[in-house]
Amino acid sequence: MASTSTPDFTRPLVLFGPSGTGKSTLLKKLLAEFPDKFGFSVSHTTRSPRTGESPGVAYHFTDRPTFERLISEGAFIENAEFSGNRYGTSAKAVQDFEGTGRRCILDIDMQGVHQIRTNHPHLNPIYLFISPPSFASLRTRLTSRGTESPESLQARLDAAKGELEYAVSEQGKADVVVVNDDLERAYGLFKRVALGEVMGEGEGDSVPGDL
Image 1: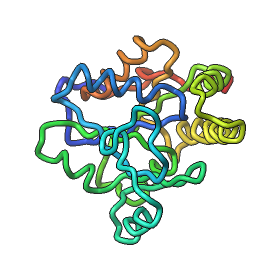
Image 2: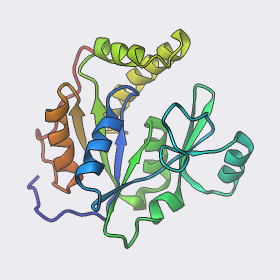
Image 3: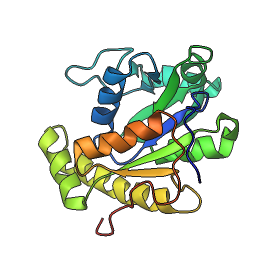
């Protein structure tokens, strides 16, 4: 597929991949370099804020009854539960970017990707999958956070296997895969996608075979 020099910022960019692959780091670099071109869709969650996380910036922190009420009202385009906490992207979070000239970026999990593909195909997003270079490196990254119990660490590693399989399947195939083995190299590819280049066959990375 040929590339185009005209970015299509009307199409949301859906970023997904296992926890610990550096999605937040890549996003922060992009938003710092292009503050007027992109905006991050802030999700709702029922989990408690971590150190340094601000309400309305990292997440919209809410309680479970409020979250479930929003589900019943059809407020979310996708929502999921992981490790006892609920996460969701509201339709309003995406609609707020319409007419702003900025491209909306969503950071969601495999369940959310499946829900958008199934229930909201009109959004027509680009699906960008961030992959770790290996399972060993993913385990090291998650362990070094110091925020995971042995049970939650194993849950995240199990979830990572499912996400990797989903990303390369026909049902959930990502438009582009970026392996975050080197931050600057990965960011260069991530930035090209975000700026609107159409990625052709072979232009993205391949999911490592030893995961």
